[in-house]
Length: 88
Image 1 (cartoon, rainbow, N blue to C red):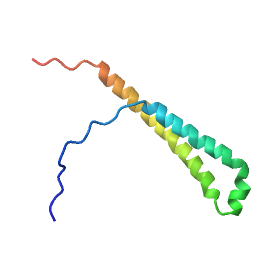
Image 2: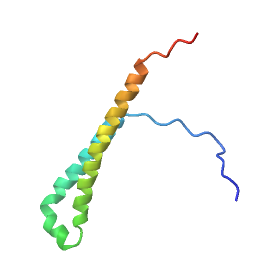
Image 3: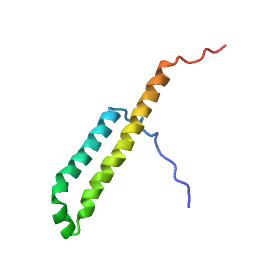
Image 4: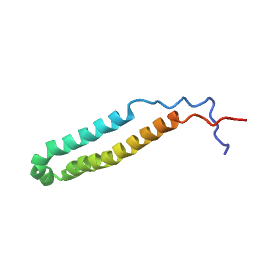
């Protein structure tokens, strides 16, 4: 079996409003959780209660994601402000 090698270079990563995107996704997960919560009895009776808990887990993981991307964004901004060291 021969080793696979790429035939062209990978594209540059896309940089966009990452914090806003993750925050928006997290809000959507929590809204879905709250929208389904009044129907918990129906979901439980039909074996679909995991849908509600999936939305809650998505919101919780989204909070971790918001924390992570905010710290990442701050680190990128700090690194951009530091001038490169002078070379002799």
